[in-house]
Amino acid sequence: MRIIIIARMTPPWLAVQSIRLAYGRKTVVDQLSLTLEAGSIGCLLGPSGCGKTSVLRAIAGFEPVTGGEIRLNGELVSGKGVHLPPEQRRIGMVFQDHALFPHLSVAANVAFGLRGVSDADTRVAQMLERVGLAHAAKRFPHELSGGQQQRVALARALAPNPALLLLDEPFSSLDVELRERLGGELRSLLKAAGTTALLVTHDQHEAFAIADEIGVMATGGIQQWASAYQLYHQPVNRFVADFVGQGAFLPGVVTDGLHVAMELGVVESDQPIRCTEHGDLCGSGCTVDVLLRPDDVAHDDASAVTARVLHKAFRGAEFLYTLELDSGKQVLSLVPSHHNHAIGERIGIRLELDHVVAYRREVADHPARVPNCAVPQH
Image 1: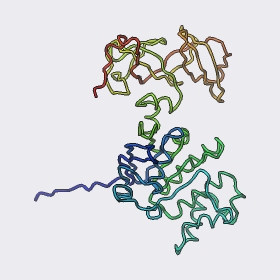
Image 2: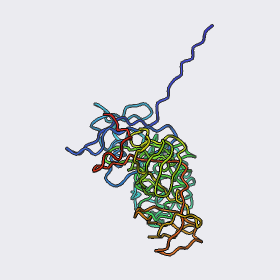
Image 3: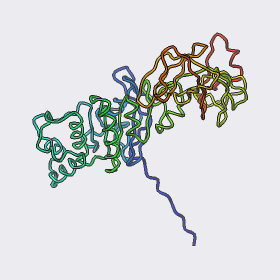
């Protein structure tokens, strides 16, 4: 007897497919797509005005899409001829200004979305215990710190057990140290509850601390959707490389497809060098710009290659030095803080580059300088 097993494909919990958003004649989001599996945490990361909050509002149902579609657990909630209102989407939201009711106690704020639920009091107690505020149930918002208020807002959003949690710059009003601590707490809380969530922020440290996958946005589209590690070490274009982490670009020439000669020396790549923005292999003689992160440039007193200290920033265990090379080009270097060099001092450096990220160098006045760079075909 022959048995045929048919695998059933489970749809993503959140599927945003080629959506377009416009305000009047101005298009703010165009052909944007992303998916989130159940229990995963995603993030839209980008500068102000890139369209990330508009995407969040469209998913929540506050804004209609003018193209594409949005599905929650396979159900079409936004698309051609369909716009399910926000209250029918089972979506929780946490805003940057907390949006707590000042005249209601902490417990009453959390219970606000549980009207008609028989075990509301039990659910409120569970949520306040989960966010560490069981002792503050009878207090009012003005009696709490900013971090505590944000925990109340989170407890209120999670109390109805939403199908999806959306967070719009949730920690932007808090100080840096508190933001980092709450970011870790939020991730642990969401993972423990198995909640699928999408965060919007302009702060990469916040994104790294919370999200499983991050979409870097610019001008209404996602430039790259990947893990924090991939965004930092394998950025697909210059915008992502500039926006995520710190770094500098140093000109180089590819010698044989695996080596690049730069002012700081010749480096060997662990794989054939590609002009990353186009995915094309770089042949011998190809002129590129190589991305150097601060940890790619090491301090070495024995090195014959030296650079002048332009700026330095003390970070406790390390200094972040901005260094000027003989050519006038600048690079960054992380140096243990017991090496306290003065501004203007020359220090020895060497490359510690394991993975080469290169971008085809555009030289408009001297096109012959890039003879072997493959030009993408359109």
